[in-house]
Amino acid sequence: MNNVVENTEHENLPVTANENGFQMSVLAGSYFGALTYTATMPMYDFKLHSKVPNSGNRTKEEISQRELDSKHARNLALYVLKGVVRATVNRLKSQEEEVPQELVEVQNKLGNQPYMALQPFVVNIQSTDMERIEMPTPAFGERTESVLHQITLPENCSLWVSDGQHRKKAIDMVFDFLDEACENQKYKARSRSLYPHDGNTEVSDTMQDIWKMCRTAAKEVCDIPVEIHVGLDVEQEKQLFTDLNMYNKKAKKDIALKFDTSNPINMFMKNELIGKTELKVCEDNKETWDNDTGAISRENLATICGFLFMNKTSINGATSSKVASQVVDAQRFWTAVRAVDGFGDDGAKSKTVIAQPVVLKALARLFFQYAFSKKKNLDMLEKLLSGIGEIDFSHQNPIWSFYELTDDEKAEHQNVIGELAEYLPNDPAGKVRNIGTYNRTDKIMKFGGRHNDIAPIVSDMIRYQCGLPSRHQN
Image (cartoon, rainbow, N blue to C red; front, side, top):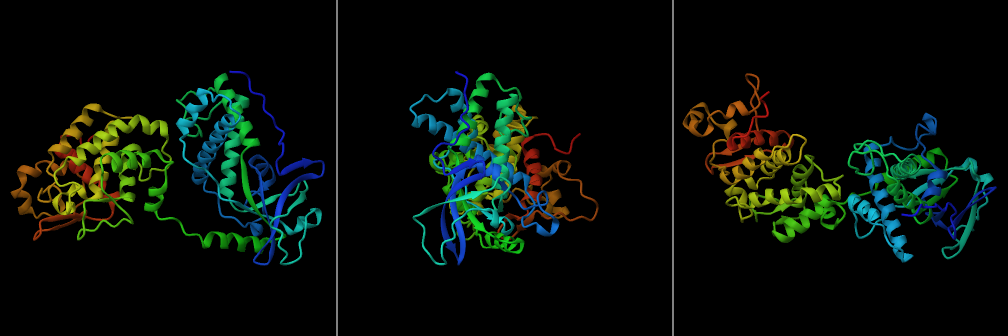
């Protein structure tokens, strides 16, 4: 691969730098009677000329932002890096140039999706900077949507971020990553790197060229939308932040999962489970006992698959390359589950406890341990898979209702219960553990809603029935 020479000049872009500062082409408008501008500017220029009004840049009384959530910023940085790689690929294609295979592999590792965008940044030019700025001031109510204006901001004048501090931090992190890869040919340790490398922190000459291409694209063809408020004081900034964050309504988890095509685990759910195996799903988490069609809500299915692939309650952060290596084993898990009598049938919850999400979560946690964790054990994995087909998942199995049984009932079912107690948590005397309710009339075991507490105990019950080691053994 030829060495990449980066072009740092922004040609034909709406932001230009000169000795007096930098100029922006903007549209002027009236936002509830207040003068505002909208603009599109290169992501790199926004990084250079924006600040967040937090403790690092303001006094305590002048802070008009919440504390940074580093985890959220990192997740956004992964998204931004994915977008930069996508822009690099699209730029090469538009120029009818060959896309290097190494770049294709980077995109496959990070994941691809049909479209990408960031929400507009909302910023303020402080009232103290107004006198030093050349900008148009249309008459109140004058419509100027179709006219581009030029505003010039001095070099020491900042765009203060009222909405978008995590997106700004994400952009900073991506450029830091690209600079480190390009200049020092180093990745951070795998747990902290934005790029899921194999553990080798050295960046090869070939990959250095790839990242230089990405850095050039990030500077030249990655623009972001900005809404600019002008002349707000600190109290007005605080009000703006409050209004922008108080009146947002987050999309329901089920509908987000239904629409999303970027997360590889979600795509496994859509393509392999719902598509090929026709696993029943229901919307809005409506899994009732009275109107049970045998369906699982998308939200519960995502949590189960989160445990299955990552041993986490969420599928966020899944990478395409990692999930691709796990798909075959994950298919085996769901094949074993779907083969259990009653699973997926109408009235499944009344027929088998495996239709209750907490039991599936318990199974998924065990499967991850033996299939994908650092302590994976393929022999134990096979015992678990065969055990799923042999365990009695009926409600009448006294193991599921162990904590509900009287001493006489435990004695009656001793041949089934056996040494189960040695697999369960060693509770102090007098403690009554409640994992659900057994209805003796209907002979139905309903597990409770505290899944994070209950799933590990159900896993213990499954370990015992499959002949797997107890988690309480040294």
